[in-house]
Image (tube, rainbow, N blue to C red; front, side):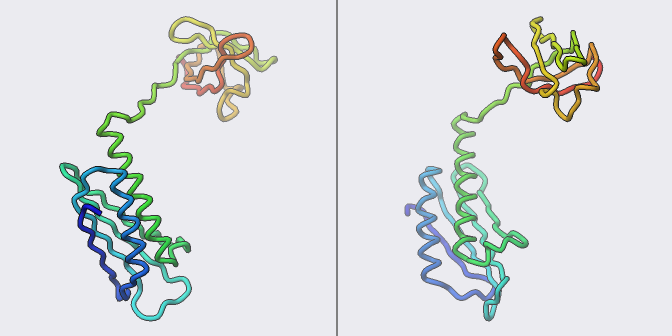
Length: 186
């Protein structure tokens, strides 16, 4: 491990060699997800005295990286019974830290997904008795849709001129809307 690791047992929790070894193994894995970790501080917090069924552990992780703000993970769920086991709590905290470090690396490398807004259009033809209609897309094409594609059972509330957002797919006979979200009157 090329970075310093500080481990603390708090809340009257006695130090555990097995738990310390697990934390060291988990910390070793962090280097794969972010180059240049400067330091990692881990606090395992338990209740003092004899353990009782239902007592929960908490883990606080602080990972320092150059030029970035610290990654802080506080695994302290109020009633997650899986966290009656300190090893599970440590695993969950490090899993969250790895996800956060991966997300940070993706943002720095410009690999963040950008979602295109859903296409917009308006209802130009509607056949309520047959349960389908057509949307005129922003580029002037007509897109078929079936009543089942309209979210929240909204087909009955549609009228010619209603503005909609839709997801387009290729159907058997050409383009069709697989999901239709009414926006209100156009």
